[in-house]
Image (tube, rainbow, N blue to C red; front, side, top):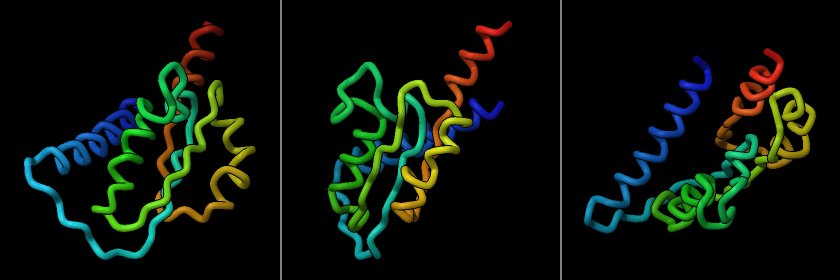
Length: 120
């Protein structure tokens, strides 16, 4: 249930960004206070198996956000391959809190699911 919810949220964010830049007209830049967004997750967030600088979902969202149409946005990829939520809690202070994010995107669940399946 939670995995479906997280996947749905990420899909909506991605779709919204794609639709916004793909409407055929150039969006206007906005005047907004600077934002810091931390992407906190596992190997999917990190970009395991793809070029992390261009093909990961983080990189694709970062590319759109850094065009300036949403104002000044700093993005931080705090994804760690093989991580699960119990390990993630240990790195919250150094990977999330220290950046004082305005927005925190959390994407975990695949490793918990895989480990749970292995123990059945």
